[in-house]
Length: 153
Image (cartoon, rainbow, N blue to C red; front, side):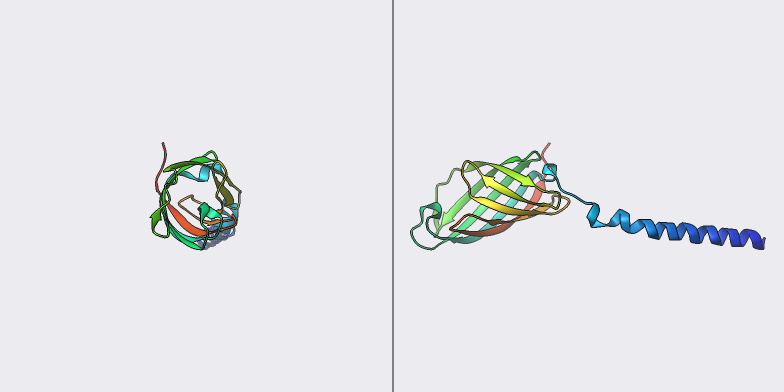
C-alpha cells in the first residue's frame, strides 16, 4: 500500500510539473499574431484633432471632429462611412470612401483612404476587437480608436 501511495504521489507530482512547464508556452502572447483577417466587421469610431494647411484645403489651423464607422473585409480592403466637421462646419466629404490596409504579424499596420489618403498607422488588438490609429500625412494631427461592434458574414 505504501508503495502504491508513493507511486501515486510521484505520478501526480510529475503531471503537475509537466502542466506548469507547458502552460506558459500555451498562454504566451508571443504565439499570437495578426493577419489581414484579424480586421473583419464593423468598427464604430469618433474622434477629434487639428488640421494644418494644406490638409482639407484649410488656410489656417483648424479643429476637426469625425464620427462614423469603418467596415473591414478581412482581406486588406474596406470602406469608411464618416462625417467630418472642420471648425464646426460640414466638409461635404464623400460619405463613403474605399480603404486599403496592411497588417503585420505584430498587429501594427497602415490604413489608406483611397484614392490618395489620408494615411494612418494602425495598432490592432490581437483578437481584432479594437484598433487605434494616428494620421501620418503632413497637416493632419488626428488620432482615434475604433471598436468592433459587428462581424461581417
